Image (cartoon, rainbow, N blue to C red; front, side, top):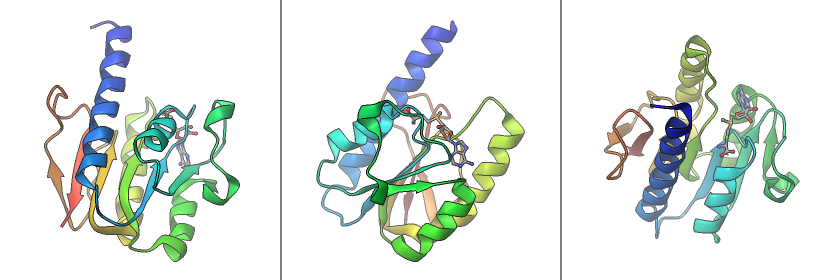
Length: 162
Ligand code: SAM
């Protein structure tokens, strides 16, 4: 598969999983967490499909498209290992949908970060929360969800709390 095909499949998988997660949490109270703003593509999509939700973004360095920069009050700026700890005080038990997309091409770094996120995130999750992630997370109190139709298992990950 060409790298172009691979990127297209990844973006389609992201969109399908985010749409499925948004549907699954409809009617549940809670906020959305976006870990890894990047250029703001998935943040913008979440804003569009969940216009009534508060979306808190975690990013160490904002370099997003100017139209996709969250308001200061909704931005946790810094390393996610520090900011998730800080957010636990503000948002404990309130996150109903989480999208984590902070992987790079380095497998060892990704695994270490996924382990830290798996440790820090559970305290922020609301009942029934859905977690969508680029890396497999090991989140206590959650179970994996099958990805939506058309998304190859393992390409993107979904889990639900409870
Ligand atoms: N989902 C985004 C989009 O659609 O544009 C792309 C996210 S990009 C792949 C990953 C982002 O995660 C980068 O902006 C990077 O700065 C951020 N990131 C990586 N490691 C991080 C860390 N430890 N703490 C905070 N942000 C981190």
